[in-house]
Amino acid sequence: MKIYRSLSLIFLSLIILTCSKESDVASNAYASSASQNTYTPPTTTPTTTTTTTVTQFTLAVTAAEGGSVSSTGGTYDDGTSVSITATPNEGYEFIGWNGTDMSSSTITIMLTANTTIEALFSQVSTITVGENIEFIYNLHESLPSEYITEFNTIMDNLIATFPATQQTWLLNPNLNIYAWNNSTSSPYTDPNGNSMQGASISGNGESFWMILEIPNAEFTNNSMHRYSVIAHEYFHVYQLSLSENFAAPSNDPNGFDILWLAEGTAVNFESLYIQQYYDYNYYNDFTSGADFTQVTTNPASYESYDVGDMNYSGSGFMILALVSELQKIGFSEEKAFQSVFKTFWESNPNSTNWKTKFEEVFTISVDNFYLMLESYSTDVSLLFPSSSITIQNIINDNSSISTSTTDTTTSTDTSTSTDTSTSTDTSTSTDTSTSTAASTYSISVSAQGSANYILTGDDANGSVTGNDPSVSLKVGDTLNFNVNASGHPFYLIKTSNGGVGSSNLIEGVSNNGAESATVSWTPTEAGTYYYICEYHSSMLGTITVTE
Image (cartoon, rainbow, N blue to C red; front, side):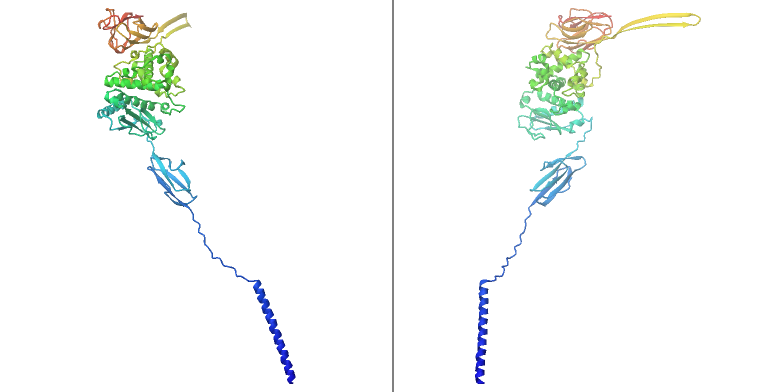
């Protein structure tokens, strides 16, 4: 039993030892495996939150006087589109934006930068066609007080006599006048942003304005131009009020820019104004030193402003010649000036049709008028108008235009009638009658010295021209002598008295003895009569009147 127990212990020990070794091997095996395949838990990265920054811009919207806007703006994200509408108040109209080139009253702005815009409005012109234009005077302190007084007087006279009235094409109901002494730098800037200078009527498609820069030397020397220029530029406003085409921009195909008609009328108007109100012959001033050769040799050159027309003297000469020609064909002196100052412009000529309009108004073609100028003396004083003529009489003249015509009508009336009752009566009558209508003849009368009168015009025999020529007409005809002969009173007398004196006058002659007026006569008896100078015996001519 004891031996068994020992064996049993030994065996049990072996079992225990064996289990222990296997356990160590297993333990070592795991350890080896763990060493070669180490597990590293994943590292947890901290979460980062990214904030996206959005760029924003400011939009500022304002409205100028006369309207409102649908939005005043605000702060918006980059690329945001904002719609804005500009609405004008009553009496105003939307005209555009400051800050953008867009022109519609409703626009959409895409913001990519800070933006400021302003809606612009303009007061709607309340033009009443036919009402006088209202002039706004901007008279600078550099002007002498006496000039300002004269300025106001001249404008009052012009507006009362030749009113310039509102028209739809004049754009602005009021017209600003800017005047200053050029001894100071130009104090005014025109609506286009340019410094004003010179003397003109200017415009920019939205309004017109008058510029009167008066040279200081004209105040120092008492030059009459400082006053005449007011009348000159005012006359251009008058032309604008009569002719839409004259008011058109220079590059407009319907515009009118024929120099001698546009400026020649203005320089004559200012000269007549000064002559009437200041008893001063301004014609001598604007023609002084001028060479009129080109007027008689190439008058068409004065259609262009490139001709270099000093003081518009050549253009003024041509208008005086036109007035002279009109008087030859039956226009009174007042009617002739009225036609060039008013009627022609009312026909609204343009640079294409002006020759047609010219002939319609004056009954003379432009080409024929240019030919007539070839025979004119370059002594412009021969064409000076009557000293008694007034701008009031010119604008108010209602006389008809007489034309020199001879109308002979011959009619033959032959009738045969047979009436049978108890008897037969046959009668044949032939009535042949010839009647000649009375004619009107116009002759211009001037004098270069005390030797002769110079006559140019027409009579019953045709053309009358030269020194003291004879004149012929018939009983009932009217003879108009348009006299412009200062110092030589022109008389019509019954019988020759040696060529001088103012007795033995023909009855029924209007303005007999005038030096500057129309001497008119309609003879009632045939005979031989005379025209004479009161003072110079050699200035004498014969008038023959037949039945």
